[in-house]
Image 1: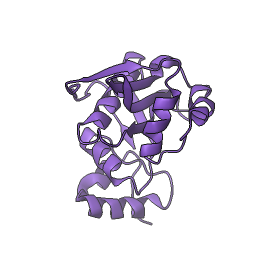
Image 2: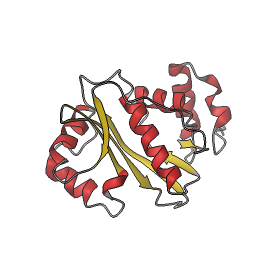
Image 3: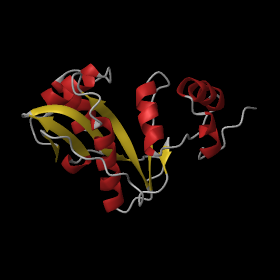
Image 4: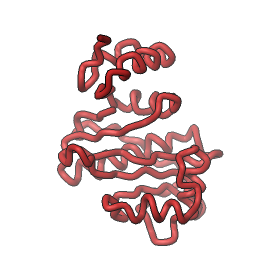
Length: 180
């Protein structure tokens, strides 16, 4: 999926009692709890360190954290797209159980978009799985559009469009999603 125009980022207010910040040394345990609750992998602090913190794309300001009462409850990473360095890459968006429904996913997504805009990127991409329908709905609501890069994508997007009631999404695809 791709967000095409970083000059048009929706404002998402920080809910009362929550605070947005960037990664700090020692955040791995809190991040692993968020990732585990969303079935995102990296379910231990060691995995977070190995796969995220030690990744060549990592810098502390690229890892956005939302906390409440000192507990990490949401996160997203503002990576660089390895295949097209002119585009940012939204990575590892997660919200801890018990804090969902407060638009924290939208908040960290907006913060990642703002980070990429501040660094001069022209667009932001992301990858996700078909079964993550709530995330896909969030991204579509936010203004992300499909990117079809595989022959299976048009059919998969057609199924998602039906499930989510978004028949027009294929018309907005970055790469045309036409069935062969």
